[in-house]
Length: 137
Image 1 (cartoon, rainbow, N blue to C red):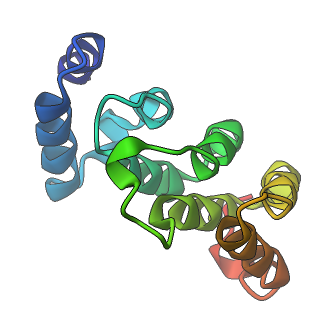
Image 2: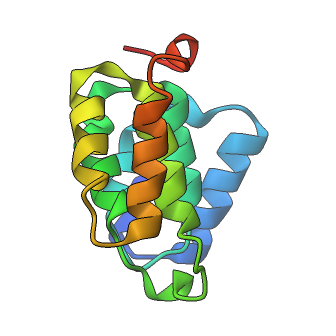
């Protein structure tokens, strides 16, 4: 984890990518998970979807506010994505975390001015009960 901490401090996107890919490949995400919330809100790299995926896997209520923020982020390297895949992934992560805080975060995202992003949140809310087995909280 110290190697990732250094890569984040140095804003070394290539090293961050290498570390995350290695952790995922070796199924060792738990070693880097504590730094994923920090990485999610940094704009200088391009590993946001991977970081969100790791947060989703561990399903910690403590990450709800970060995931809500990610759902509303506008990143220059994703300007081409008219389907807002990162926001969609963040809404799924929130739904999988479950609990009151995640439900409330999805409710706020559902009020977004961006109708596509709002739609993703509304769908997760609509399916909240039916997806109960996926929820960690």
